[in-house]
Image (tube, rainbow, N blue to C red; front, side):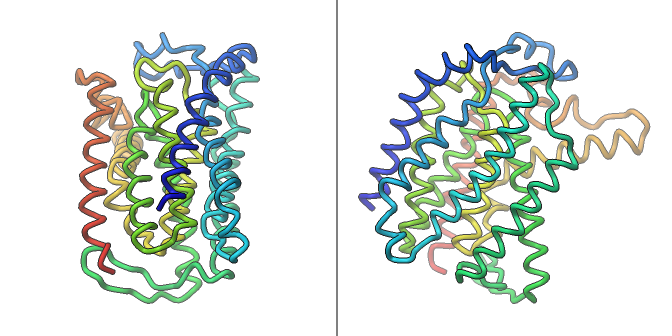
Length: 326
């Protein structure tokens, strides 16, 4: 437990101190965010805010695992390192996307098919790696009911790839207003840290704890009004971390309750697009995803941050109580 706490402190310190150097550097690089014209008009004032700030909490996670995780690696416990590697791959995909946006001064980087294929390849490779090292079983644990559902390996592999790519993109969609993705993911990281510690998977808890601390440090700069955005560099890394942790602890279905906000945001986007196409221009929401719909209804960014993070916190506590006795 002590290593996990130290890792969280190290993650916080790396993000908090790193931001003081990174933000001026991003400004000098003119790595400003381009705001979509179809978004809320009042978001246009954020045009030019530095992006790729997710490098802050990524640095903290890497430092913690590198400095504190070597006893696990020497003992052959690679779970935390594998999840970090998986998240880093998605972070690199996000960085490429961010770099292309900055270079072109537009809000478009990689195309949707390019993103999907890169993410799918990463998901498949991670699943194979985890399976070969004994971290995965083709048995789905159903939270709250203490029921196990056995699947054929091919079906499980397809399921895993679908969940991983879906989760990563859901976290990415949630990153739409100041502090929201970080605020929602903090209780999720606290949940995985507590579960890893309780189930004696300290190597996994070290990574999630470091990322928990890093996100808290990042919020110093990302809370409204944001001085920096995490960009796809950060949001795709977070998505990879969230689903990677769920699979490394062999409880992928907990992503439904603990990721309820990610799911709601994604479903609102899917429903809006589908209904728009079916009705040739009609909308269900004022604007999608859900956080923009509520913004258009008068919710402030701070209120959205508090409500969405609060809902996630409650769901994480309930889920922990529901699965701790597995």
